[in-house]
Length: 114
Length: 111
Image (cartoon, rainbow over all chains, first blue to last red):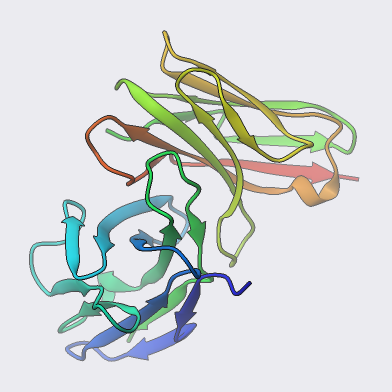
């Protein structure tokens, strides 16, 4: 059973470039969550998606950040015009869907903005 | 609102016990515990549900006090592999499945 997959594992961007982070949930999971972890800090909720729907984006910055989970393919977190403050580990988690279900985390994408 | 974890850090000798607490000001539906080692992904340990049901790790126990909106994670006879940062994630009613995580408790187990 493959776990949650994320790629790339490491991403380096210069200020002003775009970053695209991909997440493939575990087989049978239709719910995807994105969390951000700044260096030496905890996990902060960003967005919760189901296939073709954004359920809760209350943790997303208002500008430059967007997320999608298309009918086919992985979930994408997109950061436009990256700034140094975007440097962080971005984790994706997936679950079957109920609030009582376990969320399994992927290995994360570590974004470094130069 | 973010749950509050205590202590922030703890150092143990192998074989000693530890308790990590997680308190919320909101009515909780479930509490999820994870352990994260440096540079790695959080690993699921346990879920505690309103009503007393627990799902998770055999060697780790936890409690959930619904009246106080507080959960405690009990680590007994600690091993070196228990070292890491422990996070509680809380789910409240009407917020779907998203988890709000505490700031973490750093646990170091020394030989």
